[in-house]
Image (cartoon, rainbow, N blue to C red):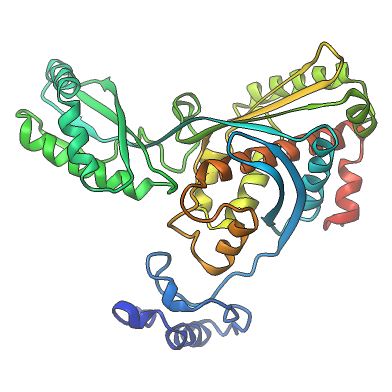
Amino acid sequence: MRNSIPRENGASDYTRKMADMRRAFVQQQTGVETDHLGRYSFDPKTLPGNIELFSGAAQVPIGLAGPLLMDGEHAKGEFYVPMATTEGTLVASYNRGMKIVYESGGVKATVMDDAMQRAPVFHFENAGQAKKFGQWVRRHFDGIKAVAENTTRIGKLRDIEQYPASKMMFLRFNFTTGDAAGQNMVGKATFAACEWIRQQYPGIKRYVLSGNLDTDKKASQINILRTRGKKVVAEATIKKSAIEKIAGVPVDLLVQQRQVSTLGCFMSGANNNGSHSANGTTALFIATGQDAANVAESSAAMVYVEKTTDGDYYFSITLPSLIVGTFGGGTGLATQRECLEILGCYGKGNACKFAEIVAATVLCGELSLMSAVMAGDWVSSHDQYGRNR
């Protein structure tokens, strides 16, 4: 017999009483006491839309790194960055990177592109019919756009890419979504558009709302090239004397080592040629209420370095598919909202600012780890700050 977890309908399921009841149930079933799971400061009634069968909270330590000095298009000034992690040395490493760039004038950052996708696939009798359908979609873009945007106050349909294969037509709807990450928003808008298309265009055998070309929560080449979320570039020029003192090697060798690292990533088939971009994105995502699974796409990164004509060290990182929001989702939960407020990024009008801060933070982490590896203190740092045994 299946023992179902206790639950009630509607708002009455989001109470401390129901959370206590579920923990008592799991203790009865497993024999495990859950004292820590039951300690939290927020009101369960704020959670509908964020979780089901609420039973408690995971307490992840949050450290502060900074100040992060920035001169971005949207993020300007000094920021203290909250990072949620259980990995010793991580916050110390990012803090070290922020110190390096602070002494060299800070990080510049630019949001290059912004698009969130849903990619339905339409089936036909043959390839010729799929081709004609694609031509019809181009001619009727304005009508499709009007239907899609009627479902949302802030979502805007930018364009529709076409990818024919066999007797199918994959359509990749590209939306801007304001300050929300926007996956649910674009799903609803694209569904409305597809239903209108189905009614208007004869000959469609069937369609599926996602043909997996939007590549939700998966690393993919198309998102690296075409963007999913924000495409952000962060860059800094580090004085020769500063970087050589920290890394213990000349700039020429640092540039050469970057070439070696890129070769290694090419050989491995990795989704970026950096060192650990997932560390910074994950720590910031958990602290600020982002969808942590989006790290699969958001951690993709492209590092480029060069020696300047003055002999200094130019370092840049491009995050081609950074999926973040400062409104909606988990951003309004108590702790997560406070962390966004620390950055001056909570609420509407701040998504691009937050994206630049994430990219700049990732850059600092890349600089720090690269320096530690070249200086030979990578392992010793984990011995001192981490849990090496």
